[in-house]
Length: 109
Image 1 (cartoon, rainbow, N blue to C red):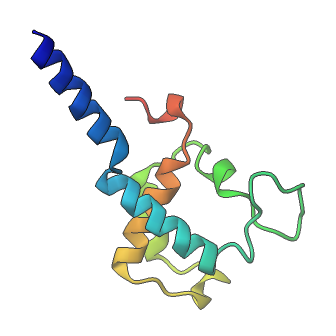
Image 2 (image 1 turned 30 degrees about the vertical axis):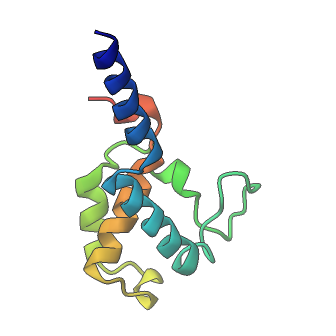
């Protein structure tokens, strides 16, 4: 029994220590957003500015902003966002990043 308990602790520690593929994708997506999108979008801690797009933390909490919405959104042109064309893998990573920003209550099934 003690061995089983220690094995469970070791497995839990490994899961905590190594990020999941979704975490990796979200981290890559954050880099894409920081490179291409942050020039126009506020950060969560920034004061309101009508000349800037809203922070992602606000956008993801709007009704209907789920994975399907963001996938569809990134496939369409949105002026002035058409300046930046993302590769398909970058789009997937950005969606993973956006979904990672949703509050825990909103992520629960």
